[in-house]
Image (cartoon, rainbow, N blue to C red; front, side, top):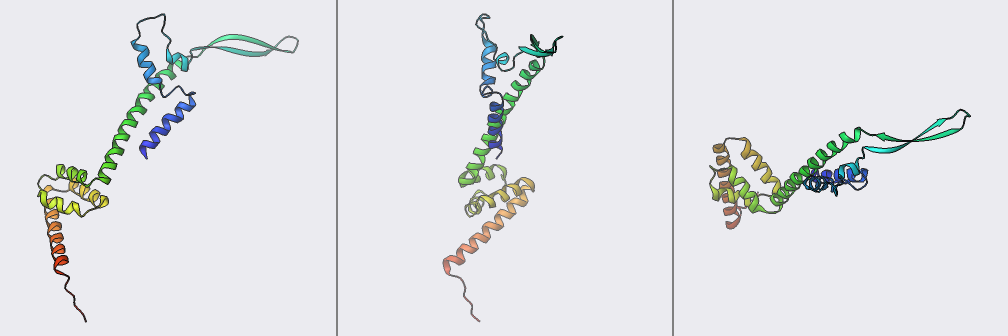
Length: 185
């Protein structure tokens, strides 16, 4: 969800700036590396012009509307170009971070070996065989609870929980192979 919001925000700002935002940061970086002053055209000035033509309408002495053309200086655009370059780098960083987080979530959801590796790194005092046995029987939601539990309790207590669960799973498997004890009333 965060990744979709980050991408959506980039495309909305791009739409707001007339399609200039997605490549804005790269163009500014390329512009700063140019040496030839004659061929330089600042991409920040293209997106946020500092001067523009203004038309003023005023009533003349005869009561008719007179048009006056002038050059207007827009100092706010000097600030805007700096703000939007920072926003561009911030949004790209957010997209990269949330994209990596999304890949992490997908890997931990679909690949039990990744879940085992992640839990094994945190639960170093736990027997690897028992941990693998318990995690083989878990789905992604169960693993999330185990991972949170492992991160928030003492490692020795977590080891005891995993050993107890592994013993119960062994007991359940042995009952399943020998057949359940059937009692009738």
